[in-house]
Length: 191
Image (tube, rainbow, N blue to C red; front, side):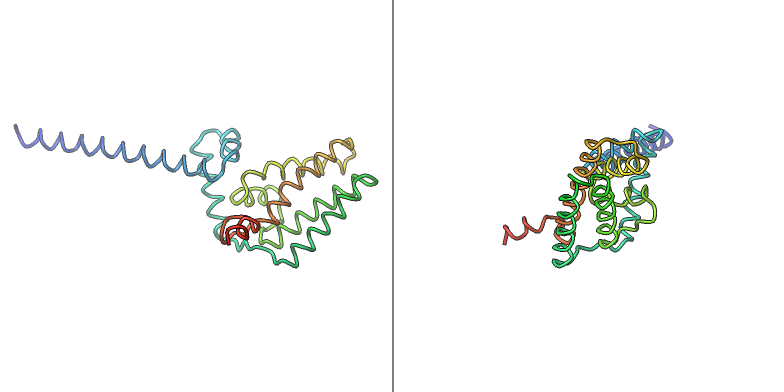
């Protein structure tokens, strides 16, 4: 066999191996993003033109999040937030719109204290989706209900649902210990 035939075979083999390696790497990246972002992966994929754009968006979120100084809150702050939440929830029966507004402000304050920039809702939701992909949709839903409530376009049941949505994110933000990636209660039980 001539040398040029061996060269062609070697080039073809290298191309095939390269394509396989690229496909495996892309598949692993997709699986890793799906694992990390959970339902947020599918939400982002449906909102973009293609999966490549969605994955680029999620990777950009993760890189931005890595630059932020997200920190757990102190036990004293945790107690203070819990007390404020209980007060807002107790006022819901008599003043649902006010209680929902307070829940919105309380969640924003907690996120800010944890280190999430809160100048822009969409960016804040994107940032929190990296650490809390399972509850970020609750945050979006609650925020939408809060905005509708400001324009008097909601019922008491809508406002109750908004409070429930805020509570899901609030509880997770309050409980997560980022250093161990487990809840404080789980960490205590394991010791």
